[in-house]
Length: 94
Image (cartoon, helix red, strand yellow):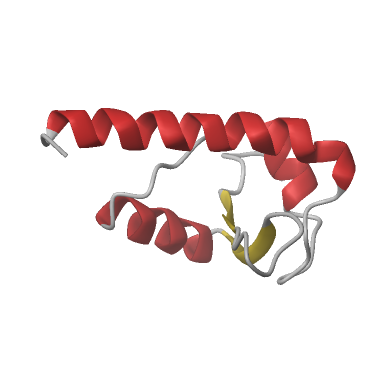
């Protein structure tokens, strides 16, 4: 079936007090993915489009920690998020 690729989204969270690594806290395809992205944008949470990382993350289960072999990719994602947060903070004077 040809057509537009199905949109996917994966949410990661990390609690340095209880997690050894970031973990998947939500994920979805199609309308669920669109809703996840919409909520993230509404709450000022940066969204990054990375199809290769999405392929790996979407194979994980909810509440599963990311595997060691993708730590570097997730670290790059976190650097992107921190950079976006700093830009947002400097733009608002915070």
